[in-house]
Length: 88
Image 1: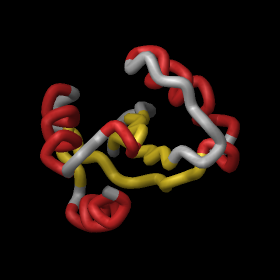
Image 2: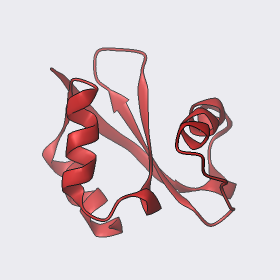
Image 3: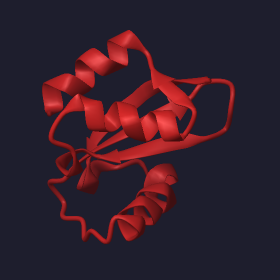
């Protein structure tokens, strides 16, 4: 199992360019259109070149995020979990 660490939470309009394609892909999977004020969390998957995108308004509680990460064979670290819970 991989460890996911929070790289940052960004408003869509402030998202670093390097994450743009990942966010667009996630939005297309969820059939969501993004607006400038949407909060987006970027998780780095430690030991890989991968990132995991969370469109935060898609989740009602942290258990939903945990389940999504389990499906990706990842678990979020404690500090990152605390930060994200503040956004939910």
